[in-house]
Image (tube, rainbow, N blue to C red; front, side, top):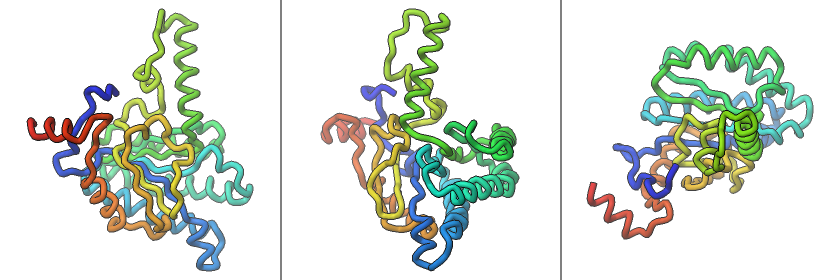
Length: 255
């Protein structure tokens, strides 16, 4: 993306085109209720369904959800195992519904570390929904921003070594073309639930000019109403992409 040509206006209805969310707080939600952590993750799945449905209805183009980071392997083995099973079961149950509702599923991250059954479910979900033209649902699983940039650089290096790219100058555009999100617009709005205010290695490259919104709401309690509050906050912001506010107003008024 060239920031010289960066858009100065939002979509026709003012909504962000691409919303990215770190779904934080499942474990704390369960702990507050004296439940096992896995119950919080199961409650979180319900929130995922509601938010996907809402974004599809609101004609949001892309919704990216951080489901499992490359650092989450450090969690207790029993919790990781339960998360893998929950992910697999949820995919198995929801693929047909996604297809029926014209939602396209894309999973980003290093899926080679997942159990073969889960890898098969991911591949099936992507294949079944590939031609859908509604909401694009991006699930980041075993994903990290550092990993994404490193794998993009590695792809470029291999292409240079093998002659696919000759005399290549490594530019921002070239790196962007090899990121796992190369086919997607960068996020317009980033949301983190659960009260933490950091991006935790999520879409590091892609969030360069994204608007941030942090909420104390724990993910299982995150409803379309809370999402709309974040969208309303986004609508009230002026996106300058390095320009001055006067420049933005001048260009906007000329459209």
